[in-house]
Structures are given as structure tokens and as C-alpha cells.
Amino acid sequence: MPEIIDQKNPAVGIQYSVGLSALGSTPTQLKQALTSIENTLSLSRIFIPEKEVWVGAYSAELIQQVPANLEAFETRNLRFALTALQQIEADIRHYVARFENKRLAIVMGTSTSGIADNEPELKLHFQGDSSIQIKQKKQEMGCLAKALQVYLGWEGVAYTISTACSSSAKAFAAGQRLINAGLADVVLVGGVDTLCKLTLNGFHSLESLSDTVCQPCGQDRDGINIGEAAALFLLSKEVAPVMLMSAGESMDAWHISAPHPEGDGAMRAMQAALDMAHLDASEIGYLNLHGTATPQNDAMEIKAVQTIFQNIAVPLSSTKHKTGHCLGAAGAIEAMICNQILKDQSWLPLHQQVVVDSELTGVNYVNYPDLDQSIQYVMSNSFAFGGSNISLIFGTQLK
Image (cartoon, rainbow, N blue to C red; front, side, top):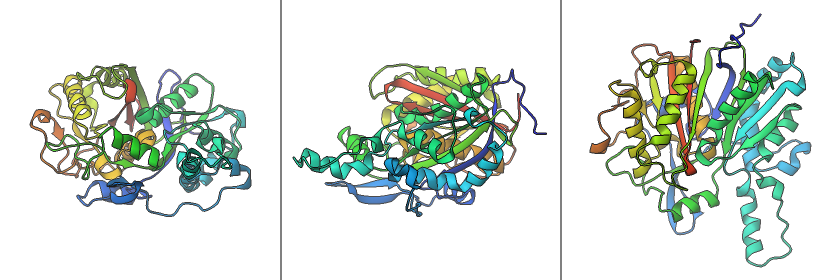
């Protein structure tokens, strides 16, 4: 019989996982990309008319057609999700066969949904073509979880979270709560975001896009690169090689797009995650920074880290110079990175190899990828517009 986590312990097991991004589609590709200095981003001219930009594009093929009962939801976003899901679908279907369909839930995170597929039609519509039919369902935020529910034939709770850059990290928190509240036995969580003109032009208008591959915490950092990803995880109360220990959330509501300059919300999220997992900061073996490479975000996050970890030299790095900022899917693809670190126990992701801002030194950036001792717990940060903050802790053993 599978070992069941004590019902008083909030941890849940990650039974299966998959992640597709600019890093590739396999754990081997992910490790290779994150432990080398080779660039994984690409230049594109198709998103912003007057500007060539670096993006984290998924370069492998996606499935070409969705099942007939999903045609109303058909978008590249959904095909991206199904391409990822099919890698672990057989395992998932075998695992959930012993549970009632109404006890199987889905919580997804996204910020783009299927807007990219409606962009050409919207352009013609706003140019005055009244014959254009805009298929609203394609870009509804809730359609991702609903489409996956139809595809899998599950009957439990199914909804999508859209809180900008914290969306898919919050899907983990929601899934964990559903299981611990007794509302579901199994929850499929994760996030999917696809490259589209809306987000690229939006960040361009905010003057937040970098002219180069982004430089998290770098002296010359000048903004972000946008990426895309699809990452999915099956959670349950059974013990697994890697577990979601806790999720700490906060809302500082400091500004519509800027973080609290002192990192107040970031600190509260990290501390809440530690408290929920009953861990001391010294037990965290690696910290995946939100690390967007914008001046304000990096400054506040390092300040928050220094407060929470004080004199603890926790190894840390941002991985967004390799994936791009995957927005609604950022938390999920970075959770996949943390998941693989704990499984492999041999490497850590390199921080961007640039000159660090002199005001952001004093922390232990990962400059050498080899892991010389095993680690039990890792933390991953996601901070979003409006001050929607979350920190996740993953572990290899129960506390």
C-alpha cells in the first residue's frame, strides 16, 4: 500500500510532473540548459513591429490537432498544455483509476490563455471589419482548466487562476488546500502561457523589456525577456520522492505594477512558507529567485532574502535568463526546476554570469553548478503585479 502523509501534515506528494519551455522537454535537457552558459533564448521580430526582442520560445513541435470535443477551446495554449500532459497521461490515468471522478480536481494558472489565436481577428475587427467573428471562449481565463477536465473526463473542481506572474505558483497552493480540506483526492496543478503580441507590446510600452538577454541582479540589468512554458504536476496525499511542503502567500497591494521597495510582501510570503512547513531558514538548500532583472524587483527581493536568511548563505539564482519570464506559467516551470534539483541531487542552476550590482552583493549566487552535498528543501519565489506574492517550498522528506 502507498504510504499516506499524516493528515495533520499539510505536505502533499508530487506523483508525476512534466515541463516544456525554452529549456527543452526532458529532465536531461533542463539540466544541461541550466548548468551551462549557453544561451537558450532566441531573437524574434514577429511580436513588436519596430523591435527585435529576445524571447524564451519552446522550439519543439506541439500536437497539431485537439480532439473533436475540444474544438471550441482550440488554441496554441491548449495544444501546448496537451503536448505536456500527454508525456505523463498514461501514468496519470493509471494512478487515478482507483479514485472517484468527482474527487479529481484541476487548478491551472495562466495570464495569456488563448489570446494569441484571437489577435489576428481582433486586429481586423478594430480596423472596422464587422464580419469578423471573435471566439471569446478561446481567450477566457477559465477555459484551460475546463478543457483539461473535458479531455481527462474528470468531474471534480476545475478552475484557472490568473494573478499575473504568481498564477501557477498559486495553483499549487490551491491544489494543496483542496486536498487538505478533503475536497479532492488528487489535483492536477500547473501553468501554461504562450508568447503573444499582447504581453510583448504591453511590457514594451512599460519600457520593461531588455535589449539583451536579461541580467537578473546584474549591474547593467535593464528589464525582462518574455518566455512561454507548460508545466503540470499531479498532487495527492501519498508520499512521493518530492513533496510540496508549503505555500506562503501575501498581498502587499503597494502599486499596480511595482513591488514594495522594502520587500515587505516578499518577506511575509517567504516567512509564511517556512512557518507552514515548520522549517528554519537554515534548512533551505537552494532558493529559486523570482529574479526578473528589473531594477526594482531585484533590489527588493535581495533585500527580502537578506532579512529572512540573515547570515545564512543559502545558494540562490534566477533562471529567467534561460526560460524568459513565463508570466502565468513562471511559478510552474520554476517548480519543475526545483523538482528536478531535488530528484537529481547533483546540480544547481547557474545564476546569470554577469557583473552583479554592487548593492545586491552579500548573498550566495550560484556560480558553479555542481552540488557537493545533498539538500532536502528548496524554496521558489513568485511575485506579481499588484503585490500578489507567493513562496513555495519543496522537499524530499516530511518534517
